[in-house]
Image 1: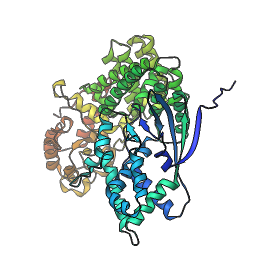
Image 2: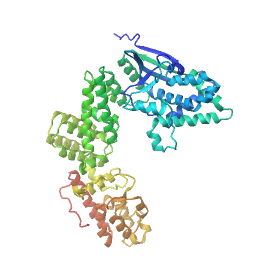
Image 3: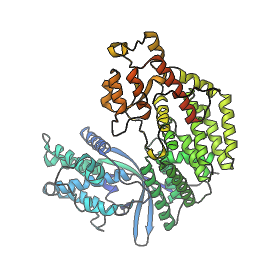
Length: 576
């Protein structure tokens, strides 16, 4: 049977004058909302839309819906804003700018218009601000002191960074510029400002949807925002959980934990959506069949919101522990193309107290790199990744996990495919730089741990240059064209090089190569796998030298990843 919602929702079309001017028009942005975040693009778009509508002679302009909850407490009533805070806050800033810049001029022209503007900011009857921001400690105080009581226009021009940080003042500065441009137009003057203010108050409309029960307001908010409006799954999950809490103290507890989550998210440079995805994989241990929001809301059914957010926070704490690890083993995971699975698996291992964590990391690294180099996409081991999460939650031992991974790799012929790909031309492979970095890590001890960033300063260099025929010194090495074509793009002829200034020297003669490989660039010491060829370059760089280095490089890859391509592996050449 359908639920009777009669009287729960009350939609009304209102002009801006009524939204900000009725006797009960007092609004609070609650603590579960984000801080005010509109930047240049959104503010200028709002202005352009309003101004264009006015210039086109439109009788009305629709500014979207606002979802409200009517709050009645003792002698004070207000509307809690569930959706619409960015527009209401921006309009309030616009009112304050008009008031402060044109109060005297508009007062002389038409005192009623400036009175209506002032009443839209602070009620003349109650002398209370129409809008309060309870989103964070001191946020309302900042809003009142910088905007409501008088816009604190800066005495000097703000930097781009300062404007990004000072959202209220940035909005005010944009509106100041737009209003001054409007006033300075031909046939403009204060009358043009008055015309715009009247259009804004009388012709711009919003639909207010007032809900008598918080749960229904949150539900409506979710319905509207899952149909295309700009809110993330994390926002919807937050609003769903928050809407289930009635007790004020427990609401404050939820918000405090959520703010801890947001802080960790920023510190780790991970979106809360992504963190929820890792958590979803942990909870499901299988491929999701629905959206992130739908899957998690179903898992959270009949559970206490504070227990949920506390467990999520614990999960993130374990992920942060991995994120903070200064380990060559952990560093190698950050180079993988699809990171969601290993992050979910290793965090699950931490949360479940898996005792052989380092050994598990080695097995996972082997699995993901071998499949990558073998030419498979992550989808090939997607189900195995979910199985790993399930096995960890079931308390399976490392031996069981290793055996399952080995069986899967054997079935997919991974090692053979990987060996073949390493023997081919590899210079254009996405996995080449990460693999060379792993070999580089293996040449340094743990006291020299330093994460190697795969940025645009890190290059793969051809020891025998790609344009070797144009350099006389390389032609003296007696390379033939067939020999060069065979070995030029093989891993034995490739090494790491750091620093933009080296790009022009990559086709240089042997003495320039030695200089590049010996010196560090970009704040780094020279790479060990590059320094190893210096002595060889002093006497030449022949086909046999490349062949020996090729054998050595493949042996290093075998050692790092813990795989075996064949029974008799050649010994490392004496190239150091």
